[in-house]
Image (cartoon, rainbow, N blue to C red):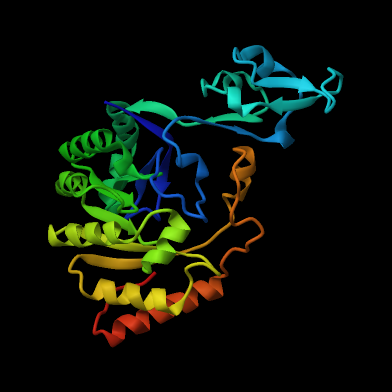
Length: 311
């Protein structure tokens, strides 16, 4: 069983309990304005081009059989030193240019990997999982976009006694959700916005199916961590925080709530992928503002008689 992934990170400590290995899969049904992994949005391989790293050696020109790369002056006349031009419309995403690039100016983001290959990597740190209560986390993108691959990976991980987490936006069919619950120890469930119209404006999809799936997961006895990406001037508002507290208070399996402060670490990826950055110029959330949000959520929960940890 093969899947499309774009990274495997070991010794992660923010993707579920303990020390974890996080597998990032490609493909996502949402288009969040603040997405910090734009390379994960499409299921197929992506080619990033970092102009500042280009040494104008021409290796990519020789490697690309589609003629996507050229070294020209702005008027189209070949000259030395030239300018590197990447024609993405011709690109078939074979990755040959990135493989030939000696300076890292071209990077292939994504590859096919088998379940067994991934588990072999995951099992390297099994001793750390045992000592810390960690395990495997599947993130993305959206893992449920590759359901058969995800299900096989989770099943085999459980067969090997590995604790499993999924980070999901919850936008999937009910059948998909039901199929993975038996093999998922904790759902890291992202909630982008609780107002449906605002959710659709920010992500491109409505909130109702996501809310229904969260309730379904809870009704099936699964454990969840609610993860809240909070973005100033977008979804950072008291009404949203109050709605989160109300929602958490009526669910049985919520272990904790995580405030995910907006950061700008993914902004350089947009230029490298020739994608529009909707958040260009926005500032990262300060530690003080994150603390304020945590305090507000804690107070809202206390008013509802709930003692759910907020971090």
